[in-house]
Length: 136
Image 1 (cartoon, rainbow, N blue to C red):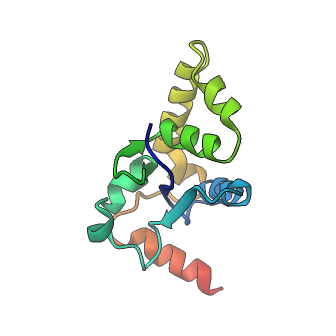
Image 2: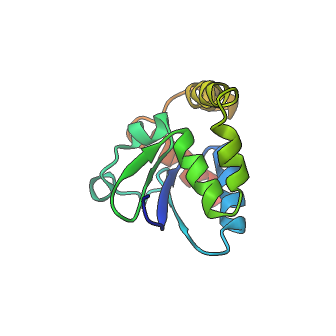
């Protein structure tokens, strides 16, 4: 098993994503999770090893040992870290897992449209949107 802390790369410009991460931060009493908002000006793809476009396509996380997980596995790891392991276990049930995987794949493909952004993050497109949002 990989070791905590787990660093989760998320899109803070996505309202749904931002709310989910805010919940994880509140529930993370043991401080096993770290978070990196790749939509900010401070995000450095070179030092993180992840291109913004890749992170925008599907959620990524890196364990303390350097191994990487993506998609639903990131949520399962976060749930385990914050004491919601029952959700992770339920999501692995043979009848449930295919639905969870399909639902996340659909969300990942459509999150820009669902959150009122009709374009994908290209270069600094998301960063400029976030910068103006945070200045208000």
